[in-house]
Image (tube, rainbow, N blue to C red):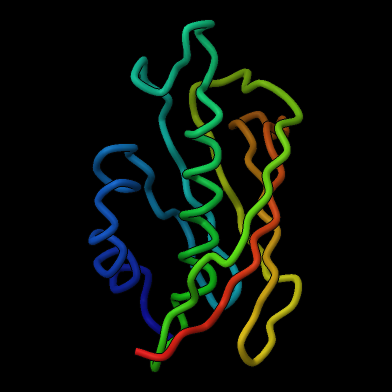
Length: 134
């Protein structure tokens, strides 16, 4: 199992998530990850709310970390993903927590919950992964 620092170093190569969006990996382990984001004005839509794409990016990145941090001989890529927006954040810090629901030889299913720092649910995503060989 890779250390959290090794996982962060590897995923620093995901420049959209880490630099453009500003998502930070809080925790990671086999089949699990938690990422965070401090909401800035650049993350807001014309109504002043967090843009849906920000929540989707967080969910997708949490899935990527959770499904790949323990793999040694390949990678899991997103095959399909669905997100349901169920609330608006009440705080300026968001978290996306990914957990494995089913891990197969070639495919996987993860659920991801996006919440604010008061644990209000903002979105729930399901992501199907497909394992590829390096």
